[in-house]
Amino acid sequence: MKAILEKHKQYLLTGVSHVIPLIACGGILIAVSLAYAFHFHLLDAHGGPDPTQGPWFVQDMFTIGVTAFKLFPAVLGGFIAFGMAGKPGLVPGFVGGLIAGTNQTIDGKTVSAGFLGALIIGLIAGHIVNWLKKLPTPKMLKPIMPIIVIPIISALPVGMLMLALNLPMAKLMITLNQGLENMQSGSQVILAMVLGAMIAFDMGGPVNKTAFFFGVAMIQQNNFAIMGACAAAICTPPLGLGLATLLGRKRWGEEQREAGLAALGMGMIGITEGAIPFAAADPVRVIPSIMFGSMVAAVVAMLGGVGDHAPHGGPIVLPVVDNRMVYVLAILAGAATTAITINTLKKLTEKPALGPASAAS
Image 1 (cartoon, rainbow, N blue to C red):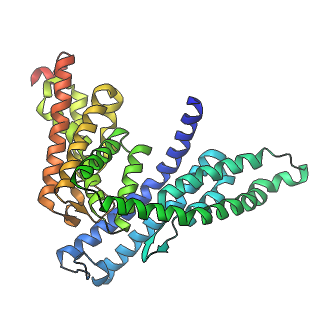
Image 2 (cartoon, rainbow, N blue to C red):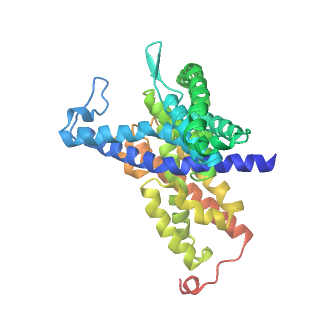
Image 3 (tube, rainbow, N blue to C red):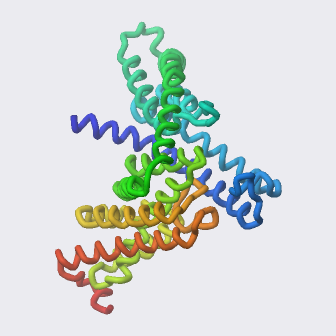
């Protein structure tokens, strides 16, 4: 069972690793165009930024960003299936993922199955292709099996299944959104704690992406609070660990202090992976510390009414964030919590590092 779960984790990571550049490209282009709209007061009827009122290059930047972003369900589904079944898995995975990203209009609201649908259909497509590859085949058909027969035969059931699942999954997203909108402050705190912990837990892995894509899906539903909490939590692990190396220099070796400076830079542009070198070296103390810090950041952001209009996190999205002062305070609180927690744990459980630079300081 453990081996099966490990294999499926690798399949998911294959899809995630291919979709991250698309998300980064789309997210940053959208963030920059929205920031331009905010700066020049180009607002829509609801008071939100409207880049389509800007000059042509802002409109094009926004359109390209949105287009890159729309591609991610197809790419996610395609490369999950590819990770499982190789090239024959690409066609059914792409087809199923693209259908998962197709909007459905329900009760006047436009939603799609999104990343959850793409994730599920990518796994299903991979299993179907692997099953087809094991069927006995006449020798004369074998050369065309992976390039014609398997793609056609697998894409048909995968596409039909996703068409059938798209509507109920879209309804599920609406139900989740309505439940979120009806939450009282106590429930919002719990939700923020869960999101913050998920964001920090595997620093860009499947758990992190589940929380992140939930925030992205909520942006599409015009609910910016979830992404606001995620955005504050995203940058906290690298910022907190970088801050820890500055505050407790004697407890970190020279290489760790250099990694801390790099982590601060990555945290400023919302790259949670900047914490990975620390977590890989000391997972028992680092992972709980960064989860605690991200939970604090997410809760402060949620209670402070922070909203993020861009599918990205960290200080880089500050121009497109609602309640910016609270957003900054949330990041500072989360980073400080992480730094104090990890330095306290190191103080209680080990002696100070004794490298040359440590001694000089």
